Image 1 (cartoon, rainbow, N blue to C red):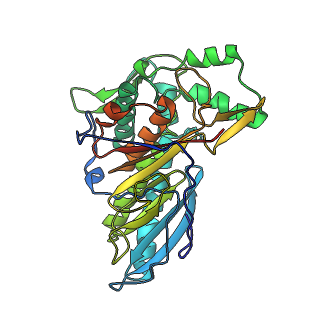
Image 2 (spheres, rainbow, N blue to C red):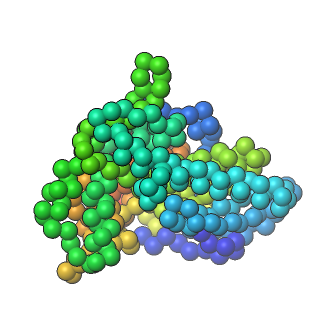
Image 3 (cartoon, rainbow, N blue to C red):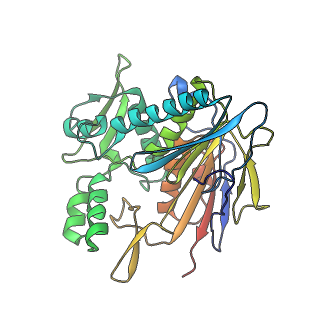
Length: 349
């Protein structure tokens, strides 16, 4: 996130492409009531600031670290007290969700689920249920390109990034024995209670490709409840926004490869994934921080994917899935997710 009055363009390279949905709604999506609030979209890694004040609203900017990244909040409020209350509500929500979905905290709801849910259903919170249900939906529709059960593989590649040593084939094979979205069940019982069940021993869930997008959505909802409806939340490669800056058609975004070069967007979200910039070089080859659950290896495609959709829960998971699926005709996949559009950029070699 840039301070007000500064700007930079997301540097895309050649071979850009776009796919759009045909307007069909997402099948199997489950949302809590607060998730149904409208949210806004920003298609760029950079917000162009410096709008000043209008309609007695002033811009305020905040930043804190949550979920391992700096979470930036920009909002318009009537005064500092209103702004601080809204930003505080947003960060409180991030902190709540981190305690639920972190795979770094041994006492998080997610890690306790991984510890106790083998061959027995474990009750889960509404937030975790929503994220896990969407994760399984995307896993099925992407034929396993997106798979939150790939935690054992992610652990191997985290170690590889530090040691600059590739995991051995035996290590990869052992990790893959404990993965597989088809061995993970999320649902409700006859009493309407939400539950999850792991079908293999040693399974470990990783929500790195979906949790931050959902958290951005929820932060906007928290600010809306606090009386602020012109805000943008950015957490790493995930963004979501509500109303745009006063007196504008939305947040102005410059994106190379986008028709016309500039868009004015609001009420939606954007996520950008891929190995274009985040990678580790081992033995002269660059491997992404994103792991292909099907092969066990970090991506080497040198591809960046940006997804625009009505909410961050969708954009975060779809950008990760599409990074793994690669280029090609993805219209059928995107058609399941209402309003989703994807932009592909290939690095020059």
